[in-house]
Length: 308
Image (cartoon, rainbow, N blue to C red):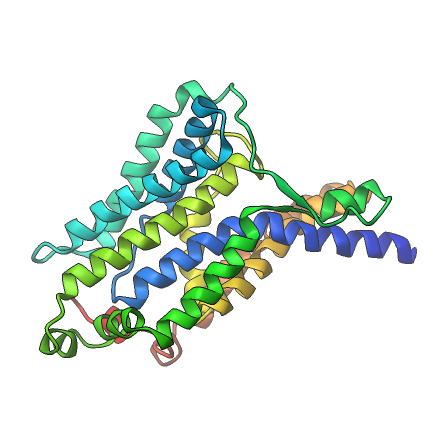
């Protein structure tokens, strides 16, 4: 372990893995950030992620185009999120209960409709060869970046700018902070939240496409491993800031990449499996750190704290 080259390869593998593993986290957390800015929480993102991953894989397999699969994944995520938004707009409807029902619905539909897709292979989203400058196959593999990742970067910057510099961002934040103020200015809070939830579902659906069409690049029923639920903790950790969601996604992606990175440099001892639990340990740590109301409310849309 004293070999500097070994450490360099390990660091490179973790960086590359952070991007690969973190890309779905990025899209799902951005989608949830957009939703929660309007004053609504969507705990059904796990179902959205699984269903969109299945739909994207099936679309790419049927059409032969991974990008059509990506669009179908986004549309599928938007459709489920729209259902969530409509149901939450009903009198006395609970965001939490509806989100749990949506999670079960999305997962159930994905498992049922996706049975024929477990064996076939679909065309994959291309990787950007950022490591082409190196002769090392390990460097080239680590820096083969998901083509969706730059889109996620641009989307994070666009949301951060849009929340503070556009009329849409102002209305969205108003709906999340004060329904009375939004209504006083003539805006329909329900429409704003439905639109934000639907758009957030589309963005989260791109994360599902990243799972099934890039890494790991297949469809199976255990594909998401709870990433949709972890994304809710990511948004809290990022304090509802899109650019901070980017950093949080890369942090969780890097944590999830430690185990495979150790294997890639030949450290195949049994203990490396313990590192696969790091993202879940981080999630628990975030929940514990934010259990204090004083901390949890900092940066949160005010309407998320109300009993509706």
